[in-house]
Image (cartoon, rainbow, N blue to C red; front, side, top):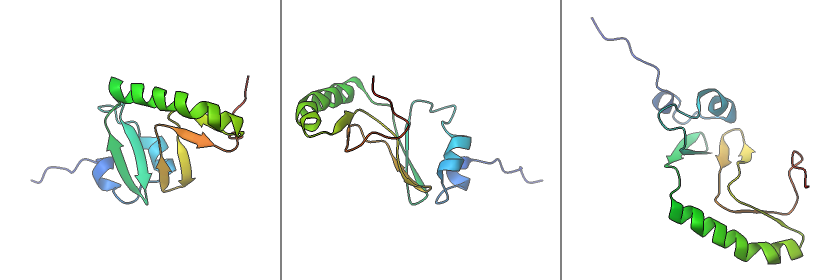
Length: 106
């Protein structure tokens, strides 16, 4: 008797990932702090950031912010950027020319 196959979203959805599937299956319980990004339906996972990366991100933001803000841009740390249902990324630092419609400035 063959063992029943278990559903594994990382294997079974390879090449088919969308934002809707990500909302349903991510984060994985065993990797809750991982960074999940997707390019053309292929899920890319990276481990949670370490202190040195966080320090570098903060330093880069401090260096970029004055010039970006003077030019009317907004500097953010890690954000979710969605370009389409099968393409999203989470860059460490993002410079935006306009605020997202869901953001409010204090």
